[in-house]
Length: 331
Image (tube, rainbow, N blue to C red; front, side):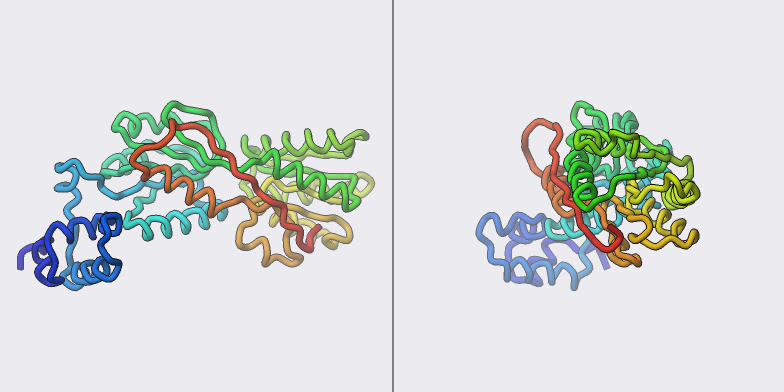
């Protein structure tokens, strides 16, 4: 049996070939075709096993309706909800995703080359990082570029990011209002965590909280969870100056801190409060449940996807969305 064509689908659904083309491309509703008719066409395509010919579409000058997604670190659970929302966006708009990524934020040329082989309409980068030179081959091919996260500006690269200054300021104000005075700040030795520390320190000092050197930073070269455990063990081992609250640069780091304090026999928050950042799904499931700062994941993912598939739009730049503290049992 030969390959199924749009003419075959039109015959099965009892409609014109042009209507089939618009329905499968996601353009039928825009010209007034009823949702029921569109559904009938797509059902016929599924029954016949129709597979669009991407190469033919590209030769005709049509978009491939495929978006590339690069994840900076597959081990970081924060990125999972972002990918899930991007997948939902792609399904709703009849696009497909091609997923790639790096390990421990180290760019591998082989991963970049593999993604370049796909005829993608746009590329969404998930994660903060300073190394964006690897995107140059995509820009040269006219691929639209979006980053969900922080990093340096680059011509042609649109960024959607959470306002960490706002998030850390709100967290500092809340901890001070709740009576915490001796704080530890912990993180992995990476630019994002040091940047969050700088934001928190600036806010804490502006509130007069660090007038007596009451903010102790500790950064570990270990991976996220291990970094938190290292920091928790270090800070918990000095009772005279032990902080009454530990601020972690991410939820995964905070999970390591919780483990370290439990191993030392310290109760959270009675002996030491703990806060995180990101509000990953596991944050609400810890015992005690983790106080954190919720990033606007759904809004960031939707804004990035809408921008990447828009036919025209404003010049690339930087869009900042506000996060929100979530106060739970750990503080």
